[in-house]
Each structure stands twice: as structure tokens, then as C-alpha cells.
Length: 256
Length: 268
Image 1: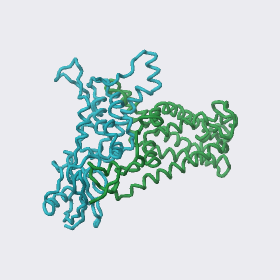
Image 2: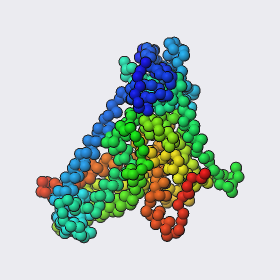
Image 3: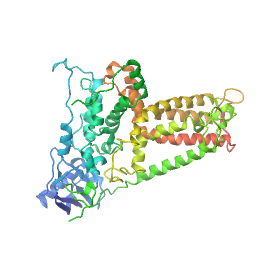
Image 4: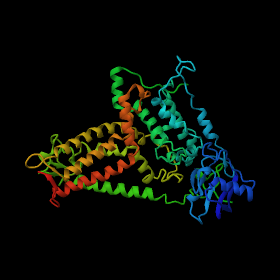
């Protein structure tokens, strides 16, 4: 056991500052263990949100030395001995207190996404899908909604005004999941992603992918394929020519 | 109590943390290396494209990719496999029919977009490091909405890769007929790498099968999508390797054409 120094941001929406703690650290521990020790021994009123301690509930998202991370999955051996470790709340969302932020922005955006729409001619229990057809969507189901991707995305992190037109990477993987779903009957998801969820704001700099604790290939497998689907509908010369020849309609605008 | 500035990341109701970023790792290294790498390549390519010399090895039919297809009236007749119909002008590249589209293909490539948005435009320079610009609209309006034209440039790049492949086939030549030398290894390796980059392109992946909803109904396209996806997983690597292979192939052909080195011949 050795003693390390931690700077933890403490405060609320009215302001705050870093508090410094010298904490004993054992081999194999993670940042969340240290935060719990600070709570137990030095600052019992330190606010922190956590639950599973196994990287599966997505509750303990924070920023450690400036990088968005799950505290329960950030091992102490990542840091040099003698290195001061800085822990702050997520910096894209309103702070509630200390390390707890109000992430309701993400739930609001999720509610705006139309749910899975089954084919009208099938009743529950009659759905049949081949594994090869659902594999792409299944990758996105690994999401634990930690919102690290939403937090690190510079579109909203650095530009508060974009929170209105931009839904964020977590919502885009949901859009891709449903658009690629073999049984989803809606045909306006691409237009919705572009026109209502702000897909065009993403400049695919991949930070969402870099911070995803589930290693979901958010950019390559969800956002870019959705951008390509939109491009296929609106900008592809061969698709345009095919429509002219076979007199097909463009994909519909989002339903009201 | 810390002070706040007027940036979104430090402003209430978010946590009022004065430092705009708290990263202590060397996050500047990636953008700096990208700027150096791309700038060096663009400088070399610009010099070579307007040099208008040492691009063709008559004995072995080596043609550098920077001059393919050679369609200027200034081209050596044997190097012009597709005719010579553009005027010979110092400011008009000999391969003016292909180079602008290859440049546009790379400029609109999803990997290069990430690279130059981060390193040249600082939007953002690194993850959780503030954007270098006060306003941001992404690719929603002119001119960046034009990035959606990547699909057009992919089709053209595909055709140009076929031309490069044809050049590599024609280069199995010597004054006695069939020939094979180190230059052929270089040209073929470059073409193979160009295909790895082009077929792993995100637009190619979409065209091959990514646009489908039911892979099970299209097994051949699913297979093509799988191959494209495998290449796509290392798209960044292919992007950088092909920049290097293009420059090295051109440099090799230039060195042989200028008589600085002799081609190592295995046959003929």
C-alpha cells in the first residue's frame, strides 16, 4: 500500500474548486475504489454516482486527468507513482454536485428517437431473423449508456448552442441499429438522422469511439454508414440515375 | 474559488473549472506528426507533378503513378497509353485527368477528414481538448457539405486504380520483350496497396453491401462487404502506407529514369 495524491473537483452549479486528498492505494485498485476511500475516511459528503463497479451500468462516468472514463474501469497502475491524479465531473453536462452531473440531455434526445417499428403483418412471436442480418445491430446493443461519447463529442462539449440541433453519437448508434434492423419497418430513419438529429454536425473525428468502454466502433460502424446511407439517398450519381430510369421515389422525409 | 471563462466547457451550469483541458499526456504529438507528414507529402507531390520530367523509363515501360494516365501533348508518346489530348503547359499536370480526382478522393476520405480536422483545423485537436473555433456547424452547410461527394470520387478513384493496375501490367517489359525487375516489384506493390486503400474505403464498403438491410438475401454482396470491412478496419494504416508507397514508387521511377540508379533486373 502506498499513498497517492488526488485532486477532486468539489462544488455545484454556483462554483467550486479542487480539493486535494492524500489517499492510500492498494495494488489492483481502480479510481472508484480511491473515491470510495476518500468518502469513507476524509470527505463523507463527497457526491459520486456509481452502481455495479464492473463497467456495465455506466453510472460512474467522470474525467480522469482530463480524459472521459469510467472510474470503475480505470486502474491505478495507469498512473505513474508520484503523479497527482485529477478527477472532475463530466464537463459537457450541468453539474449537480461534486462528481455528479445531470445527464438528462441524453434521455431527452433518446426519447425523440422513434421506437422499433415491427412489420404490420407480423404479430409478436412471429418475428424471425437470421443471425447474419442482426449482427451489425447487436454491436450497438452493447451500449451501457455511460454517455462518455456524448460527453467527449466536441459538437456539444465546446458549443452549447448545438445541444438543440445535435443528438450525439449515442443516439446515432441507436439510429443505425434500427435502420440496419431486418424487421424495422420505418423508412424515414436516414432522413430523420440528417434533418432532425444533426448527423451532418459530426465531422467524424472519432473521439466517441476512442472513449467508448464497450469498444463499439461508433464512427466506423454506425455514424459513417448512416452518413453513407444519407449520401446514397441524396448524393449518389448511380442511385440518381437508377431512380430516373426505374422512376423510383427518394426516401421519405421524417414522419410527423 | 476558481474563475471561469466564457467557453462552454467551463461555464455554469457546468462545473466551473478554469482549465479548458486537464489532459497531461502528450496529446499534441498526433496532430503535429499528421501536419508534418501531410505537408511533406504535399510538398513532394507538388514538386513532382509540375516537374514534368523523369516519369517514364523507356526500356522497361515504368510509368510513375503521378503521371498516369499521361494525357498531355508533352508526354512521351510511348507513355501515353490513353492518347495525348491535353495541351502541354507548365501549369497543367501531365496526368491532369486523374490527379484532381485522386486529390478529391483523399480530401473527402473519412480518415483524412479526421486527420486534417484534428491537426490543421483544430476541431478538435484531440479528445476532450477544446475546439479551436468559437462557432461550429460541422458538415451541414457549404463548403463542408460537399464532403458528401466522397461517393463520386470513390467511383473515379476505382477507375484510376484500374489504370494504375494496367500500367503495372504493361511494365513487365524489356527491350527484348518480357522483362521483370525491381521496378516491377515496386509498381505492383504500390498497386496492391492502392487497392487495399480504395476497396477499404467507407463508400466502397457501403456500395458493396453496407446499404443492405438483409445480408442473408445477398450472400455475394455480404462476402464483398466482409472483405471491404476487413480492409476498412485498417483504413488509417492503408491511407498512410499508400501515401508513402506512392512517393517511393515515384521516387524509384524518377531515379531510374534520370539515370541515378540502374534497375535491378531479374529477367530481361
